[in-house]
Amino acid sequence: MKTKQPFVRIVRRTDFPLWAMIIINIAAVLVAVGIGAILLAAIKVDPFVYYKDMFTIGTIDNRFAYKNFEGLIEFFVPLLITSLALALTFKMKFWNIGGEGQFIMGAISSATVALLLGNSLPSWLTLIMMAVCGAVSAGIYGLVVAFFKVKWGTNETLMTLMLNYIALYALKYFGETQAGWNFFLSGESVRPVFATFPESAWMYTIKIGKFSLNITLVIAILLCALIYIYMKKTKHGYEISVVGDSQSTAKYAGMKVGRIVMRTMFLSAALIGLAGTFYVSTAHSLSTSVTNNVGWTGIIVAWLSRLNPVMILVTSLLISVLRVGCQTAATNFPVIDSNFADLLQGIILFTVLMADFLTRFKIVFRKNTEKEVEDK
Image (cartoon, rainbow, N blue to C red):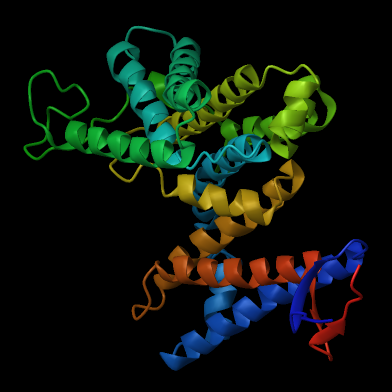
C-alpha cells in the first residue's frame, strides 16, 4: 500500500567537520554585523566609523583609553563568572534563569558587610567576609529552588524567574526608603542615594601606569580554569553530565540525583553571588541597576558557547566588547543610544543560533511524497 512521507525532513548530522563549523559561525557573526551596518546607514550613521569606535571601545586617539579598559573589565568579570555558573546547572538540564536575583542577593549581602563592618575591620578581612556572605546568601537563595524541585517536583524555571523579581524589588525598596534603619542610603543626601562603601571595602587593584588592573580579572580567569577542570576531570562534573543526559541512568548507576541537583545549584548560585560581590566592591556602591543585565546575558553566553568554559571565556569577552563598545560609540553619535548594543546582540544571537542549527542538522527534501510499503 502507499503511505505518505513528509516532503521535508530534518536529520541530525553526525560528521560535520570542526573547521566548517567555525567558518559558519564566523559567517553568522559577519551577517549580523552586516545587518547592523544596514540599520546604521538607514539612520545616516557611517557604519565604518561606528564599528571602528565599537570594536576598539573608543581607545584610538584617546588619552583616557585606560578608563575604557577599566570599564570593560568591570562588565566582563561579572558576565564571565555568571555565564560559567549558569553552564553548571544547564549541563544537568536544570534551567536556572535566576542569575539576576542571585546576583542581587550577593550584592546586597556584600554591601551589608561593607557598610556595617567596613570601618572596623582590615581591608583584606572585609573583602573576604563580603565574598563569603555574598556567595553563601546567593547560594541559599538558589538552594531553595533546588530543594523544592527535588522534594515536590516544582518548575525551576518559574521559581527562579519569580525570585528574580523578589530580589529586584527588595533592592528598590532599600534604595528608595528613607528611614533611620536603612543604612544602605547615604545620610548626606536629601534624596535617596546609595551610600559609598568605606575604602576598606574597595576591591584591590594593581597600578600599571595610569591603568588600574582589578584583581577580580585574575580571579575570574582562574575560576574559568577551575570550572573547566571541575566539569571535565572530576567525579562531580561527571555526575552532572550523567544527570543531564538521563536521570534514570544516573539513578540506575547509584547516583543520588537529588543531592547532585542541590549541590550543583548551590554552587552555581554562590558563584553568581560572588560575581555580585566583585561588582559592588569595584563600583564601591550598590545601585538599582547593579546587575547590568548579566543574569540574562549570561544565559545567551552559556548557550552560544555550548556550555564549554573555554568558549564562555571568549564569548563573554566578545559580548563585553560589544556592550562597552556600543556605549562608547554612542557618545559620538547622538542619534544612537547605547541600546543599539541590545539590538545588535539579539541579531547576533539569531544568526548564530541559525548557524548552530545548520551545523547540527540538515534539511532533506523528498522528490516522491508517496512510498510503497509492503503489507506484512
